[in-house]
Image (tube, helix red, strand yellow):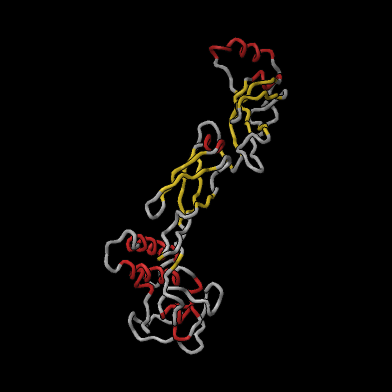
Length: 298
């Protein structure tokens, strides 16, 4: 039985990170997939690539494989050392389960059968999952939308994004990941939602934030004003003596969901121009005893 150098098969150094291994696997799997490659040895290479990823892509199996040492070379005659500690490491179902279509070398290390005799002749392996990003607008986050996603094998499909999706929301799209090996099913696409910045509202989780301008007399005397929300205009009562920067919470007016978000309106006093209210300002300056800085100390 020949030793297999899984690092050489994936074209990565032994010091490669798990992310580097994943990237190398995806690149080679796309290149040698029998459905797209015209090379005569594509199926053989594809099986080797998947077997190498099955070992190096799993930290437990990789650790067990590395315990064999770095002195072995591809093609050398190999037998597992007595009492091999890596037997069955990371194998679903434990020792004795095996993997259809993998080499005798793999089975001798991880399949749990002396001599590495394989079960059956079929080769079947699920493809790896992959990640993607879908950018949507705030209005689409509020009401839901559909986006087109592309699968690793070239196909595409429409995916429904439900109302209330926000930054960091993840959707699993079945069958849009990396192609499977042999008759194996493809992996899934893990789609992360990102909401584009909006000029009106600032999004935090499912909560929305917005500045709302008010006049000095509305702040001083109190008023009932029309305030914008994603669901339409509402009547908002401003209490007398409101200071600029006061935040008012409108419960349930954020993004929808099982626990809907809220809308936070920050009241900002806007002063009319001197041209419009100069005389009024002058009268106030002469007659008012209001001294907002009287309590300040150096």
